[in-house]
Amino acid sequence: MIEETVVRYKPSYITIDPRTKIFLMVTVTSIMATGSSHGAMFYLRHLLMVLPFIALFISKKGKAAIRFLILYLIIFALNFVVLPYTTGFLSFLVLATVGIYTNILPGFIMGYYLISTTSVSEFIAAMEKLKVSYKIIIPFSVVFRFFPTVKEEYISIQNAMKIKGVTIRKSPIEMIEYRLVPLLISVTKIGEELSASALTRGLGSPIKRTNICKIGLKKIDYFLLLLASLCWVVLIFF
Image 1 (tube, one colour):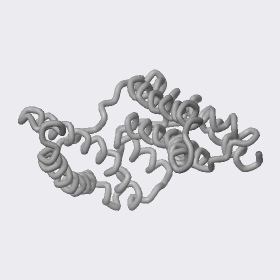
Image 2 (image 1 turned 120 degrees about the vertical axis):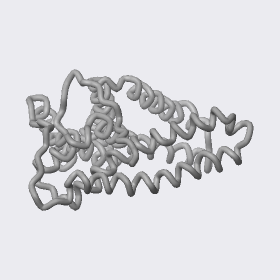
Image 3 (image 1 turned 45 degrees about the vertical axis):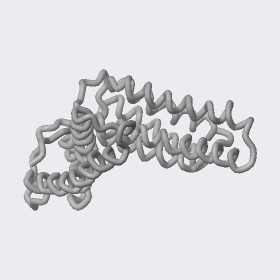
Image 4 (image 1 turned 180 degrees about the horizontal axis):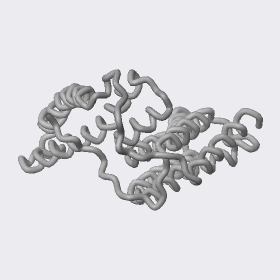
């Protein structure tokens, strides 16, 4: 069996309930995907662009926040520096890239924040409190462990290839053969083993499970839930 490799959590300055994180992610993803930027939506979109970075910083994910910020700066540079000097198809390509990334990136960052700051046990406890069916909980709990595990597997393969001297500059074909092929095989095995691990933990049992994770809504959660609800009000009525 593979080892349980989950993102290594660091204690945050402010802890947020997983249910709040999920609601924030859905709010940011849905509202940003509308693409509207008229009237009050102009200010709302800018608020939702900033919110994921604030969440990352208070969760001690400063390095990730800076990387995403650099990506944002590249997108804005394309919009304000490159776009005015392009015409025809190239102009359309740059405009489409900027528009798609501007709308999708905030939701992607919130998804990263949710996965990187929430353990599988916390997620399961939150879903159980919401009375969600185990038919939904089991696949999502597997997904929570899947991506971090694949990342660890990729790093291991990458390190092994560096030791053997296989790089994209020296031998691009061998790099594909010795790095991507093992990764694809590992991904298949990881999915099967994580599913078996979830069932071994009793997630498919009809008997009510216990959970040592203590989660609950606090003042910060109520504030964020209210803020997200107001965002929906602005979207619907303004």
